[in-house]
Figure 1 (cartoon, rainbow, N blue to C red):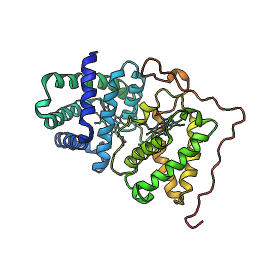
Figure 2 (tube, protein in one colour):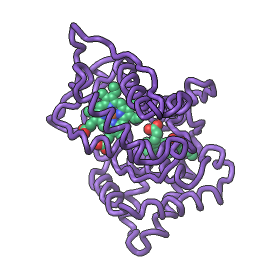
Figure 3 (spheres, rainbow, N blue to C red):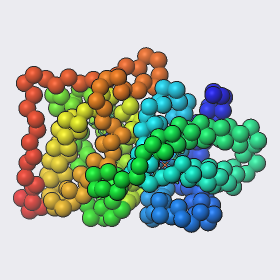
Figure 4 (cartoon, rainbow, N blue to C red):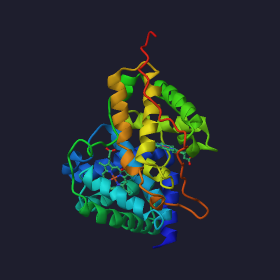
Length: 303
Ligand code: HEM
Ligand code: HEM
């Protein structure tokens, strides 16, 4: 473990900032030129590929807390093996392409110490992930093949403004909700609606403007149960239905959303991962008189 190296990589990622899509394109050019067989795993249009690349860097940025987030990195490795069909031997060519892209992008700024830092940090994370990858068997059945992505959905929904409107409605309800609302105390409703919109727009095939952490990391310290995810889903369904979108679109949206559940759901408080000193697990106890939300029929556009 070398804290200095982790810090260097995290700051380097911060500095890349909005140039990340350029770096992403250079990464895929190197990766797919040298390993054309990986295009089966890294499929999709430029926006999709940029999102996947962004996710990888977002996870590497969290390496500052690697000892704290080991369990979460292990689960990330499991998802790579089981859902994305990644094998242990794919990590080396991925690192090589990343290093070439960084060299191309940073030029003289990619100094020997910085190169060494990236090399070490990638290996540190990859070694943890690989342990889980080699244990997980790729399963191609429907329930596990959900990858949180539907490349044509944004257009079918009617664009980003519609997604934002739905999220504003969704958060308005959830902030007031007697059970799930407990998670959101002290949070900023408008900011969350915007961030959730940026995140989902990328998952629906639009440009990726989301610059936060991946959902698995954002919710690491929250004890989120399957029942809570199901209650949230009803609220989300109602918020989408209210917009007058067809049942088919509601189902496609929900399918993308469920693609992220595996990284969030926990069975006990012990599975919560705390990133820093002073943080505590967020647990929302169900009120005794709680009434599970019910699905309202979708509102028709001319209602
Ligand atoms: C240190 C190395 C890596 C890190 C930190 C990393 C991180 C991530 C993260 C955070 C995600 C977002 C989805 C989730 O949380 O489950 C992701 C998605 C993905 N990763 Fe990786 N990854 C790494 C290496 C690899 C390698 C070696 C491959 C294959 C060659 C790969 C292929 C994918 C694919 C295909 C997805 C997209 C799933 C989708 O949204 O369709 N990753 N990665
Ligand atoms: C019952 C389930 C869930 C609960 C209780 C929950 C709760 C929260 C809370 C409290 C935050 C604010 C975090 C902070 O500012 O510190 C947040 C942020 C967020 N959540 Fe969730 N969430 C749930 C499910 C999901 C799902 C399924 C997704 C993905 C589809 C998701 C995506 C996000 C995103 C993208 C953010 C913004 C992160 C950022 O600040 O950059 N959440 N969530």
